[in-house]
Image (tube, rainbow, N blue to C red; front, side, top):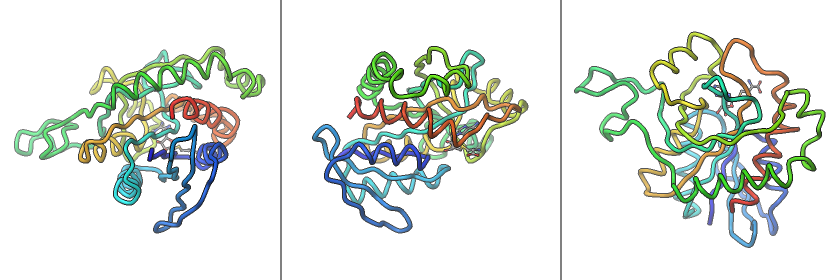
Length: 248
Ligand code: SAH
């Protein structure tokens, strides 16, 4: 069984719509969808936003459904100046940018206390498969899937695929000050979001392969995004569903 988590309802709905033999279960306050995709058993659930939501949801999927891998999709803020809205970021490693016990017992900023880890890598096999799936989606389905005017409105000309470091924390980053602090502290950082590093820590604890695939929705700065719900519905959810369809 493959666990698929999405951080937005629109993305989740589009993924659930691709499943066959779907059934639903309620676990706590969450609705979990069970079904098949490409003849593989999958379990799909909305994680909620933030590290606690992502960690509890990942743990629930592992403990209750004995999943063998976790795929997480959502949107993220681009940190490096060359990243544009609509670009795809595949997480190679993950850091919790709000983890800071610096000075206690010689721990460094961002280090996870007692695990002696700062960055947690995702599965290399899933990284490669995700890159292929994303390339294939952009080359074959993008034009028929997303309306040209939606792409034009956002100036999405030819989305690019990047892989690298993603930072997660329980904050929506939308100020120049915070952006500069993250750039300085983590020079390789590609994107910021609120869940990936929590999924990474749970997957690490359970020795499970995982991957996080993000679509850039904003530049984590003072220019808050466009029309967020519209971007998710009309653009990002198509990207993530198209990639997941090819990845599973
Ligand atoms: N403000 C938007 C939605 C917030 S997005 C709205 O009005 O609908 C929050 C989600 O997007 C989280 O799941 C997080 O992982 C991701 N995200 C996107 N851009 C982000 C940023 N700049 N900082 C932190 N999280 C971001």
